[in-house]
Structure formats: structure tokens, C-alpha cells
Length: 361
View 1 (cartoon, helix red, strand yellow):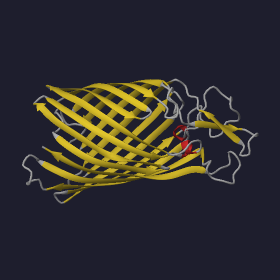
View 2 (cartoon, rainbow, N blue to C red):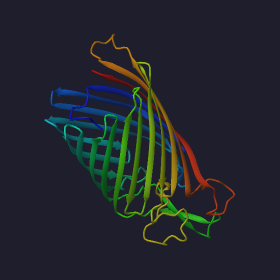
View 3 (spheres, one colour):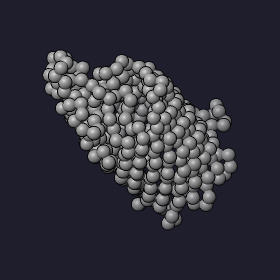
View 4 (cartoon, rainbow, N blue to C red):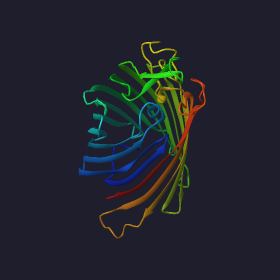
């Protein structure tokens, strides 16, 4: 959200991020640098690394744990023309079995005395899907994303945002390592596995409303409500609430809470009656009916920069999130002593930690 058409501030960020939960550990560094090269042009570059190890339960049930690295590069430019900002950029993400290239453009225009801002963005994605266990496996995904956002200054203290996003995907949309399970009375455990089968197209739509209310003592309240629907019959929503509180001149504390609820895809099942029971079959837990709750805190400290004349100000930050996932129709097949389809429903907790230093210059 922005008050008027201005270029982003010159800054640099250095971050370490970590995720641990559900049998998967992800961590790595990230670097972001943004610099104005003219009074009307700003450039930014980002480098991001994920070191991934372990395996989620729906992969672990049919395969072994793994370790890989994902690297991402982002480049973008902003051009300021009167009350309009034009943005263009590209992103490349690479890992041993997946490559993704994304190209994006956007236009943002201020209206009504800089009290209103309309932003329109488009992105095109070109992904290549491989398989580490099969060098001949090669599939593609094409993705188009459209987003419209209206930001409005409602009062001197209240800022609101409304957005609509539509994404169309076409190509190989499932995970080549995941399998669905079906009843098989010819084996002792009562079920077998077969590779998932997905549709080759998907369209998603999302509506969101966001708000920020500034309190008299430099504190602020934040909220977001977002609803989601797609052509796979998945309906979902999330609600986010946050509070920002300053302490003295140098400390800022943030706390937030998030609720997420999702229904299942029309072709999802934890246990199919037979191997050919329908055209499309999936057991990816992310397509099941589930909910998650997130509690997070963030602490920022503005440190003294007199030792570096080229830095206007700097902050040291730590953020910690605890996420609890509860699946309503995805069962823990690693639990022993249960008949097929009677295993306990799966749940797990995850922690996300971000340590970063930011400098403005």
C-alpha cells in the first residue's frame, strides 16, 4: 500500500530463513538490493537460496527422504512518470528437477489527490518439470496471472486495499513423485499405490480486502480477509490480524494471527476404491480438506548508523511463526496397527524463523 506515486527507497536486506515441520527442513540466505539510478528509475535485484532436506509424509510413504537446493534470481525496474509507476521484471528459479521462469509487468496510477491508487499487474510463467529418478522425464507448465488492486485512503488514520487475482495454469500440474492409494485386497496392508493423475488445466480466482489503521501512539492495527476458488472445486479463505507497537525510539514489536480453511479438490481422496475409479485421482495433502493456524511475532531494532556515513538508517530484525496444520481427510499411513482407511488423521506443527538486517541509504 502506498500514499502516493513515489519510487521505493534505496535499501539493502540480508536475511537467513528457516522452516522446520512435517518432516521437511528448509533454510538458506537471501539478499535484496534496491537502488535508484535516476530520479525516475529504480532497479532491484534479489538472490534467494533454499536448502531442502527430508520428505513430507505423502512422499515419504512411497519414497525416501531427499536433499536438494533451489536458487532464485529476481531482477526488476520501476519507472516513475508523473503519478504513474511502470514496473517490469523477471525471475528464475532452479533446482535439480524443476526450472521456473517468470516475466512480469505492472502499472500503478494515483488518482484524486493521491488518495486512491489503481495497480494492474500481469505475469507469465514458463516452468519445466523433471524427475530426479528418470532423466527422460520432461513436462512443461504455462501460467498466466492477472491482478487488479485498488488502494484507498479512507481517513487520516485508515488505509484500505481491495484486490482481485486470476491465474490460469496449463500443462503438467501434478507432482511426479506423489502417488494416490487405492484398496487392494491382494496385498497384506490392504492398499497399493499408483501415480497421481491431474487435469492439465486449472483456473484460480481470489478476492482480498486489507486494511491498516494507524493509532495515535505510532502503533497500528492490520487485517486481511482473502477468499479463493478454483476449477478443481477448492474453496478456501484466510483471515489475518496484526498489531504493531513501538517501544521507545528504536524498538518495534509486531504480533499477528492467521486462520486458513480449505476444502478438498473434486478428484482428491485419501483412499480410492480401485485403481481406475475415476479419470483424475490425487492424494496430495495440499488438495485435501484442512486448516491451519499461525501465531507470529517480530522484533525490530533500529541501530545507530553514525559509524557508516553512507547508511541513513538500519534495522536488525527477527521474526518467528508457529504454524499448526490439521488435516480432516488425509490419514497418517505411517501409523501402524490400523486397517486401511482407519489410520488417524494427520497433523503437524511447523516453525518459521527469519533473521535479517536492513539498511537504507
